[in-house]
Image (tube, rainbow, N blue to C red; front, side, top):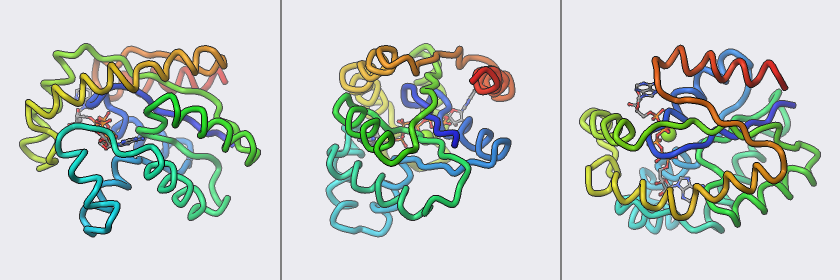
Length: 190
Ligand code: AP5
Ligand code: MG
């Protein structure tokens, strides 16, 4: 099984690269951002709570996200060759629970790939996407707050993955194809 974590700041290209990876390697894709947006669209109790936080650029609660994650893994029912995890884990506490769970389930993660992009480029990408996507969190003030939250709460997760020898960072600047080539190189070395 090939279980990968695609990591990085808002707008670094996690969703874009996850799509390319799942097509080439035949993997499933779980994006917690997409799971949350689906709850919001359906106006479930979780969705209503998450909407209040996400539209301001804050994280959803760890417990809510971990529950959604384990339901999504359960729905795959062991039928896939592996999973690309996009946007999770996003806090130290999520990382510890997640790794323990995957190890216990006999599906350990292989690697975390961190897509590194300078802040100015992240802001440009998200603002231009926001004009088409209509995502409530792609407005300039919210994007800036998401980047702050990333630095404070999510970036420390890198150190944890370094400490368990599963961390690789790649340069996320360049064409989408170029960035994908860098990811392919990491995957072929596993
Ligand atoms: P989530 O949906 O995960 O959003 P995010 O991490 O902020 O990242 P984005 O989806 O905005 O960007 P991306 O890295 O996928 O880049 P993309 O490929 O789209 O989470 C949303 C919110 O949900 C969070 O803020 C949080 O509140 C909540 N949440 C989610 N998971 C959570 C968790 N685990 N715990 C708690 N809360 C959670 O690319 C961006 C743009 O750039 C696109 O327009 C794309 O076309 C373009 N682009 C991509 N690659 C390139 C390239 N190489 N060159 C030029 N442009 C490019
Ligand atoms: Mg995304």
